[in-house]
Amino acid sequence: MATRRIGIIMNGVTGRMGTNQHLIRSIVAIREQGGINVPGEDTIWPDPILVGRDEKKVRALAQAHGIERWSTNLSACLANPDDVIYFDAQTTTRRADALRAAIAAGKHIYCEKPIATDVATARELAQLADSAGIKHGVVQDKLFLPGLLKLKRVIDSGFFGRILSIRGEFGYWVFEGDWQSAQRPSWNYRKEDGGGIIVDMLCHWQYVLDNLFGRVTAVSCLGATHIPERIDEQGKSYECTADDAAYATFQLENGIIAHFNSSWTVRVYRDELLTLQIDGTHGSAISGLRECKVQSRVNTPRAIWNPDVPNSIRFQDNWMDVPDNETFTNGFKAQWELFLKHVVYDTPFRWDLYEGAKGVQLAELGLQSWAERRWLDVPELTLTKES
Ligand SMILES: NC(=O)c1ccc[n+]([C@@H]2O[C@H](COP(=O)([O-])OP(=O)(O)OC[C@H]3O[C@@H](n4cnc5c(N)ncnc54)[C@H](O)[C@@H]3O)[C@@H](O)[C@H]2O)c1
Image 1 (spheres, helix red, strand yellow):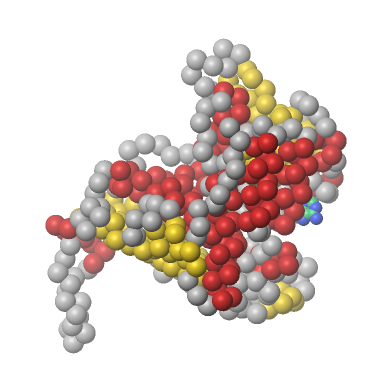
Image 2 (cartoon, rainbow, N blue to C red):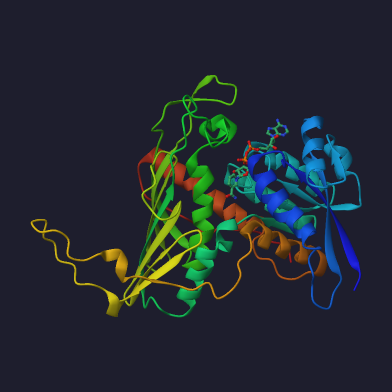
């Protein structure tokens, strides 16, 4: 079989996500494995051109990873018909304009989430992409986490009986930047720059809930800016104008109740940075980035409240690991491979810009719920998809 080259314009790859997840762990990893081998078809060979503002930085990044092409001129890249995909991992507020230009140039689109900071723009982008007849996709990486893939297996087996509730704990302490540098870029803490944990994380919870459990029909969200001032990359203090924690409850179409705490101001006393507890009538599960443990009704210890004596039950001992039973690949890479196959061989890919718009909708409603201090229904996003 021959090799099928596919040119990809990669913008925002000098950033945290762009470099680590999309360039190194996805595209470079795919090239190191010899491309994407599609049974009975040609092997897909990704040929990226890296785009960035800073020539020195983008050249050094390309050279460090054996990439032959780089540029500081996005318009020129978009004008090249040999590169058929535009990928965007820029900061969120820059995405919409770049996507509009790429759609107008006839490129297929793949991008980070959130696709925009408001649902009107998100919907407009999805509709523009559809009208242009191009293929489009948005990163929904949590679905590809080994822990969540194992959880999906548990759900599909019918283990839970009737699922009652989901408790999600996400977060870790992000240093303020004074005595230790922050682990996240400072724009995350400025609303005017597209920051805020509600905008960032509710779109993740939307697709996790929607794909694994059911459609979200209502939301109540309380945000907070616990740390009012931080130190930026230049060592300057700045005011935090965006939320750094969100306490959100969701109702699902099938009666399931989900509550997610998302925080950059929490110290971790959990097995993983994200844990989901699912309780059902016949069993429960704890799932995270890599692990998934279950407890069935017959393994459920009889808990009795008595603070007068030491605990007689080691509750963690009554859970069993769900085995891997397969080799998991990096979630970002797994989704890239599916998207590239979708573009080249028209295989199915359901995480398109419409799905991305649903995440933006939930985030927007979460912010509104916080501002108005009330529950809000989540209407089905009316999308006038062209057939
Ligand atoms: N899928 C996930 O789990 C996940 C996790 C974190 C962030 N993200 C998303 O990824 C995106 C990038 O986040 P990040 O943490 O990598 O941010 P980052 O600040 O590290 O990177 C941002 C990128 O945008 C570029 N950029 C910023 N301003 C620019 C300008 N004026 N002109 C040209 N380029 C500019 C930067 O050079 C850099 O390449 C965000 O939309 C964020 O929401 C997704």
